Length: 169
Length: 124
Image 1: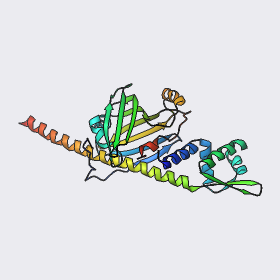
Image 2 (image 1 turned 180 degrees about the vertical axis):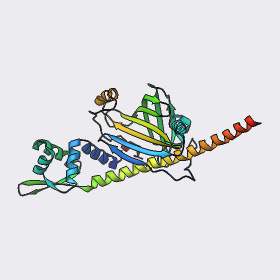
Image 3 (image 1 turned 135 degrees about the horizontal axis):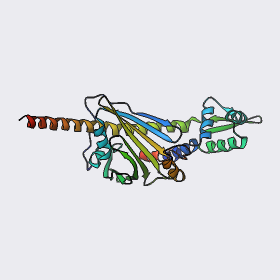
Image 4 (image 1 turned 60 degrees about the horizontal axis):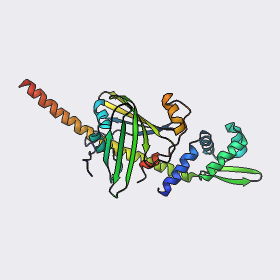
């Protein structure tokens, strides 16, 4: 592993991860963190920090983490397993409100689903706790432009196919 | 690509259509003949039959013929596989977020130390 891995918090009680679906095209993940919003935002958007936690199951590390955090800028992540297997994803930032919201596209290198997914991450801080909500919207290539224009309204053709890649180790 | 992933994708594709999802929801209450599903879902018979063929190909339903009627029932296996897959997805993210907890604690304590040092230097 080429980056130091963060250890689980020893004192505070772990918050519960909520995983739900919204309509039939979206998966919504919600999780609270005992930290101010600006720190969570940093951890989500600064490569040297992202590399330390966004690494999935044991055996994986994140040797490539490039982030050009501006609207129209792109990001590139590559994960590597100790057995040599690699998995990569790239996307473009569509909307950024510092400490509050990031909307980006997401496409895995070996994606077999049509088009891209659209990922919306929002942070809400209350009483020193920050709640992260991450929504993945699965769009077809045809639907994508319309979706981005209409601000994620209806008429989206999609599937959950891509998600399987995240856990295909 | 692992075999179970391929099967999972077939399940997702089959369920991604709203009408097919409704059929599955209906069958969760018990086996039903095609005619009854046509009535309940306000769809045309050929449409329902087409959707049932897709669900059958994905292994989500089984059919038996009772006199003149074709009765469909859910097969639990793909749904169980889906459930365990969702569990694995959840576990991956739980691991990620627990590491993030640790990282945030680390940054907070670093900031606290730095803050103390700054305050000290101001009063000195």
